[in-house]
Amino acid sequence: MKESYKKNHFHGYLFALIATAIWSGNFIVARNLSDTIPPISLAFWRWVIAFMALSPFALTRFIKDWHLLKKHFLYLMITSIFGVTIFNTLIYIAGQTTTAINLSLISITFPIFIIIISRFLYKEKITFEKIMGIILVAIGVVLIITNGSPTLLFQLTFFKGDIWMLLAAIIFAIYSILLKHKPKEINVLTFQYATFTFGLIMLFPFYLIELSVVKPAIYNSTSIISIIYVGIGASLIAFILWNKAILIIGPVRSGMVYYTLPVFSSLLAFFILKENLSTNHFYSAFLIISGIILSNFKTNIQRIRL
Image 1 (spheres, one colour):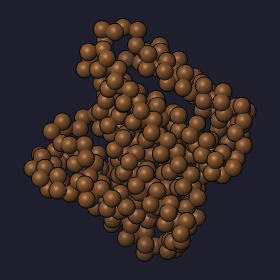
Image 2 (tube, one colour):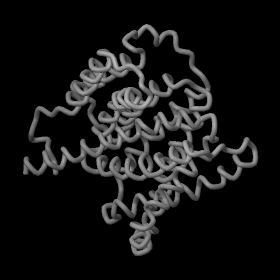
Image 3 (cartoon, one colour):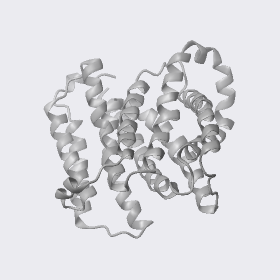
Image 4 (cartoon, helix red, strand yellow):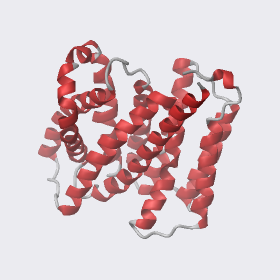
């Protein structure tokens, strides 16, 4: 039993880690496209790509399981709105009016909202280990964002986009908690395809409105490749892995793994953007990983449930 528990939880943490790594690239791509593609258009085509890529594998099962989807239609609509229609759209909107450093700082607050919301809704205990883990993770993240000079936090200028990013973090926390309640009779692939479909349908009217009021998007080889990346990587692969992680280890533990996002962002910036990778990044990575381990540490083996 213990071996099975460890194996399942290892897979859960691994899925969450890979999803986070993919999403770190999404932030870089989204920022680069903020001046060429309007936010709702970027979100819309992202999900169109994800929908098309998943259709050959999930459409038949989707039709077969339609009676189950109708049974849980309200849950699926709410989950689709939060996870597909709103969340990433808010990130792209935020990127129009705020800086990259502010986006990075605010984006990693979502695991904290998971812990807070779980405490109020489910009376989930906030243990000493979780508190200390959050503190270690927060210190590590601040070191990365401020390049080893935490006093820079007091010099940050906040913009309208920061409010949108904060709202996006809260939305993603709610979405992650909703995933924990996914009906067991609905296959993960069917569930993902259903949320892509419903979320895209609800996003479509806003896409049409944006087309009529803002300047047209600029599509070139770079933007097309970027959209394919966020469509297949950040939307399809990452969301499926994240959903699996939520089902295995829960939203709180998955949320703590998400704190590794600045580490992956720094590595991508080093290899892709040729930015410097200093010893400060390694210290930060150590603090973040230590905090994640500590926040998920259980001293009582009797609390294990399969």
